[in-house]
Length: 475
Image (cartoon, rainbow, N blue to C red):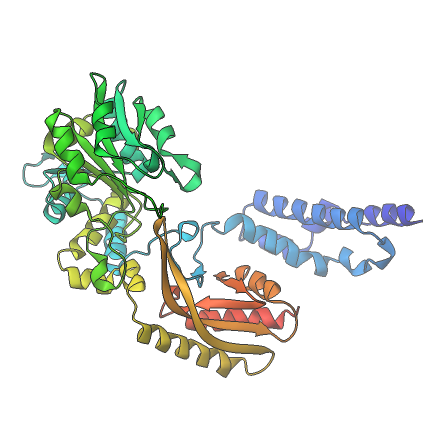
């Protein structure tokens, strides 16, 4: 009986021509390409067909599902799915500041305006305005990078993995690179230092043990096939307890005594001493250069707070060789990244302003009092708009730096706690995540947590709107 009813319902699915002849669909043809509409109708009818096929009891299906009035909103949703961008703005209420899945660092308004200006008009990307002839795109950021770090030369590629790959391929292809076993890290997306090294053509020479490596280990490994000593900052993990590693200054002295270069991959990269602002000590690019590194690489969109980029600084003789490597062209950055990076770097000329205004640094250095006030403002807004159906509280919690930086440091914060009277916290979290704009929150102990550290000053009303709409939908 159920199978007969299922077949009956399948035969009642309206055909494509019938749907397209409706006046509403004809009007849509004035706004969208015919191919978009056809695909939307096809998907909508396929969804209806699957609903019938997978129904446990077809007798419980409401026959209104066959009506055009029921199907039209589905067609419209399918059209929107096709024509609207998939990459879109979300609200980060997780408390993870450099959230890799949510785009890492936010850009300063100066950087955004510079990107917009450069993208809207022609630019001197590779044109020397003084000499009136072709120039290099790297000159726009090289001078400021050298000024900020004390390096002799600089180069920028599209991310830090690319920077490491390019340096190793230039300096050590076919030869050995000495690395401590405890520094053979895996970064996001399962990319590992040994794999990057293998692709570069360099040969890995591991020394020491996972938790302890001594200067003598490096010295014993140096031979005729050695091209480089590499130090990798383990920014995404820490080994605690019985540990030992060689300082960069000692490595540089050893390498230079054997006429070898030493490279440090700083990973997250830092241009100011964040310990002055309440965070743990993190090595800076300036310190790496001062302590004798010949080449230093780091990311642009992590602790530096700029766009995605892989920054290479160091001695002129090595950086110039890296620049002319043909692989460099495949890894180079575009004009929009250069514009955002240049504007971000210029902010570092005034360290106080950089710490106060660069979004990533500002969020990392909020005081307890600032976080308390932010939580009070947001909770008042929610209570004013949603007086019933939701239990609202404010409590202490912890945020994370994210982006592979400061893996063991937790930042004291304030969170708004939401517990719906009807339905679960997981259901509310899902509805917030599927809203417009999506609100990405955490769930803990049957509550949805909104961490005010990563919520923008202009996002309070959007959050209240999202909560209100989610509760209206019911459990």
